[in-house]
Length: 271
Image (cartoon, rainbow, N blue to C red; front, side, top):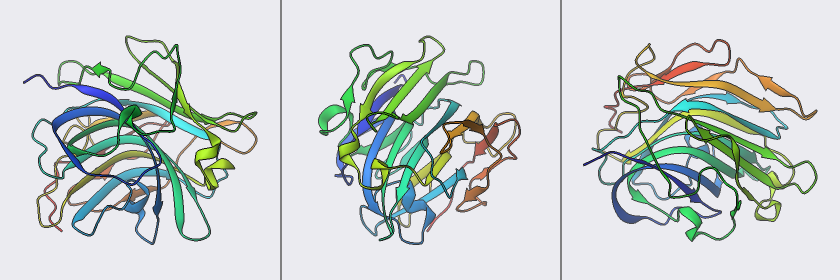
């Protein structure tokens, strides 16, 4: 079976699990969720105590932020099963004082289960001239040929909507669409946290899947480059940021230099 990556959108909803068969997706997500004290809660809506999650990211915190993004390579994971999820993305997060949050997520996604993705969820407004549409099939990277995706999410300074821009090596950068300001509470004003990197999810008691290319940070690992965020003055800042890694026995991030870092790992965690 040919591996593939598809652009998907999840809009202002908790995950409603539906079996869709194993697929490789490029996802965009918006969710409202409790944050609690677990940094992994930023990355996916809470959908029950039967799942474990792991993250390996760099994190810009203590906003306000008004956008962010980067460029990363795309991988397929044909062996994900059950409730396994493998994601590489940019997360734009607005944490509220009541310990809940708004979150926008854009990146590639491999899973055997999905929720309300694509334009099946109301809210996201697709551009008529988008270079990449939800549902498009994209090539995945191999050891001999790397395929990349650029994701940029930025708040419009006039209307306040959050616009998504994306491109691959075969498409020019352009507007994919936007999430209206009216969908959000905290993100109606600004983001407080932005994350760049990888996330995996697995049923508790099961072995966690690989992240990125499946290698720990080195020259064969997945990479994230052009890591930037927009500050309160509208400046694009290329950051050296602190990292957040849930379990370094299975996943990790390399040092960030020139707004670039390697990340990922073979998995193998059981929780």
